[in-house]
Each structure stands twice: as structure tokens, then as C-alpha cells.
Image (cartoon, rainbow, N blue to C red; front, side, top):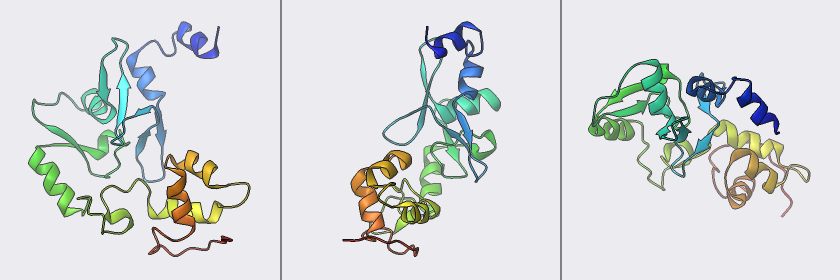
Length: 174
């Protein structure tokens, strides 16, 4: 029997509440980041014991705050799609979501650099950390696994082909 199975048998993970909590990690920004399944759009996914799937942030809102009226969106004040912190979540319409996106310059304009590009998966702190960590031991493959991005993304970052507006030390032999 695997250790995970033993945990379930002991009752620790036999409720949705405990399973949900086991997939949360606190980050330095005060976000409670989802470390379970992530959809390709960056939002966390939570599967209840009844086999029904939820967006993790919507599940969190309903669990901690209350029901979500039909047609309403659960928006993030922190702009972190993995965040399930109920203090960072608020209800709004699709129009509110669009206004929030444009007000915060997250409209996905590829000409916008770094965090101003709404499709960015990394932040300025990540970029500096990647450049500082890059070495023979901590290569693009390992860094891509840590930051959950493509190997070529890491390669472009350490060679200042992308995120070049973020200044940080990097020693890359080309």
C-alpha cells in the first residue's frame, strides 16, 4: 500500500476540506497558491470526492465566503490565477473582469514587456532568480521544471532575449 493510500485510509484526506487544504502553499505575496492540478490557462483545478471538478479559486470562494450567483465571475485582486486566498477574491461580472484586465494592463498585448503582458507566467523576481541561479548544475532544463515554463523560455531569459528590461547579473557563455 502506498503512503498516499495510507493517509486516505487514516481519514486525513477523506474530506474535500482536507484535500483542498493539502493543495495550498503560502507565497511571499500573501497569496495562498494552488499546488494541485493546473489548467493550461493557469487556473487551478480541484476535484471533489464526488468526482466533480471546480476551478480552485471558485471552490475557495464558495467554501469560505458563500455561493456564487449565476453568471458571476470570481476575480483576483492579486492577479495571481493560482491564488485561492478568499481575501484576494471578489465577485464581478464579465464586464468587471474586462475592465479590471484593461485597468491593470493585463490585456495580453505581446508588445508589452514582462508583467505588463497579460500572458506573463513569471514575474520580475522570478526573472532575477532564474538569471542568478543559472549555471551548469542549474541548467535551463532544471529551471524550466522549477518555474513550470518551456526550456526555450528559460534560455531566452538567461540570454536577455526576453525580459531584457529587467536588469540582473547573469554569466552566460555563448
